[in-house]
Amino acid sequence: MSSRAGKYIARHRKKEFFNQQGRDLISFQRVTIGSLPDNVLLDIFDLYRGMLLPYETWHRLVRVCRRWRYVVFASSCRLGLYFLCKTTTPVREILNVWPPMQIFVEDEQPTPLGGDNIIAALEHPDRVQSISLRSLPSSLLERLATSPVMQESFPVLKNVWLGVIKNRQIPAVLPDTFLGGSAPRLHSFILSGIPFPALPKVLLSARDLVRLRLYRVPHTGYISPEAMVTCLSALANLEFFFLEFQSPSSRPDRGIQRPPLLTRVDLPALAALYFRGVSEYVEDFLVRINTPVLITIEIEFFNRVIFDIPQLFEFVSRTEALGSAKRAELFFTKEFASLVVYHPESPQGRGLDNTSVRVRCHAFDWQISFLVQICSQLLPHFSSVERLDIECDVTDPLDRQDDMDYRQWLEIFRPFIAVQSLHIPRLDRLIAPALQELTGVRVMEVLPALRSLFLTDPDPSGSVRKAIGPFITARHLSNQPVTVHRWEEEKR
Image (cartoon, rainbow, N blue to C red; front, side, top):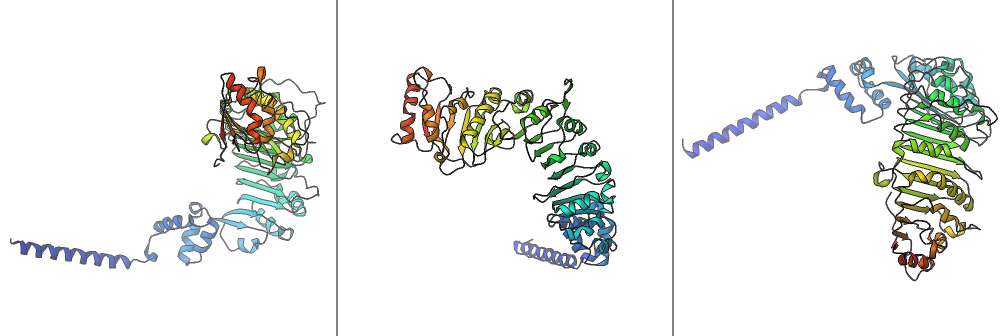
């Protein structure tokens, strides 16, 4: 066969190939979505619902045609269909039209006028999976708290978030029979500003609970540390616990004689613990629990003169994941002062894995006094800390110095025996006078391992550098030199 004939045959076959592809494409284009089987339609619907909120997805699909409506409603579980009820939703009319499906009662700003719609949705407790009413007016909260529908058991309820609008009115107390006294399928339970003294009874039935958040608990909703630990003991899957009291009046009664503690309760899944209240409460609470996988503990105390927290120190000591920290931070704002210790698991030494203790107060000298007490009690456990940051969010820290005693900084530094790097941006002009004290025989009294000092302005001719000059010289003469560096803000 000549080469010319071979080329002709090759061109002919190529032409035939593309002609066949074109015929196949034309045939493919003639396939309409109406000819697709139900299982293929469901796969398409599954992909589509990932693009929008589930509630919006099925509402659009069922309006296309009768067949689609049938396919969607016949596969309500697979597609996760639910009916979203707000205070403005005409619930009774809609429920008479749509087939049975899950009910989500959610409204970020519910109004008293919409109470009838909320009640109408809650009249189907076997279908309600979520109740989220975050800013309830007091009148609507009282109506819900006393409504017969809320005294029924909700067997499929997974999420509850109830919050009351902040005002001077005393919110209604949730009764013992709220939710029928049990919620066996709960995964998340959040209350904000609402008293619920019978909460321990409900939680004892919530074996699957993962997140428990109690914000702004009023004194009328006070639950003792003993009762709280008892109900938490039944929550083997609890991972997140947040407890915040409204006022320092919510505290244990020291006049009550308590039996000696024989055993502690294990919370095997608890990874994060947040608390705001008085130190007596957190002390009585922590002494009663073990948390083998805890990686985050954040505590905020109400302001007072004396802080005595031996149980917090002992709790941190026996919680393995909270040890061996390499970095700590002291942080000051106009409203609070805090000590944060970052654990090795935190990315770049920062992140959610930390131990944080803070106090809410405005006076700078009170903030310093708090940190002196906290550092002296808590820091011995963190003797491995090698980097210390001291930061402030105010424009001019010198405005906050008042009549504070600069020597208190030395008391704060004293427990940090392993710190090699000290970062004091914005506060260097306040701390420099304290470092002036560390000369002669006192040169190694605090921060004995210090090697690097980071300042906002390390210029040798600057006032801060001159103030710390004697300290730098004394350390050099003691063969433990400290190098001064310019501090640069890091990306958090």
